[in-house]
Length: 185
Image (cartoon, rainbow, N blue to C red; front, side):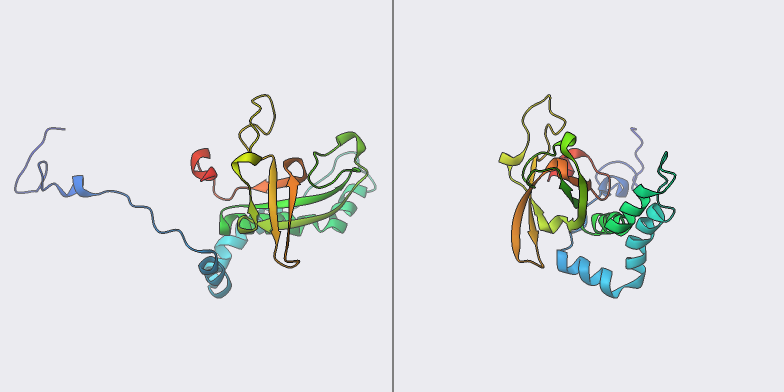
């Protein structure tokens, strides 16, 4: 702005305002995040409360007077699965829900929407259990998955195994909303 005052250190090389900048904090490791969540009740509330509030009143399904849809969601424990995806997405920076869709296809294949008979299970995985390579990214600009992974590799801690799943069989929670470039990184 052109103002300069040597006594107030305004302008020039000694201006304290020109020396102020933002520096991003260090990213916390998975174990550090787990320990903070596990042993700090305040931190746990920060993560849990929004997830609880988002699912507290749950859903209403129109044109289902006998509540078959809600009974199915209850049987799948869908409320808890979505709540967990929100929690782990917020804590770790992302999570996804793999849907066990009975459509005659394998997890690695796109969902056959005309062949869906049932959704048999839902499983939540945090971002540290999910990976993909650049070869998994869809390069077709006309695809609904353009620029996004079409396949995810899941590491199941409890089973000690890995499997691949097509993007049409997952629900993704990205965590905090950030620009695409930062999210991909």
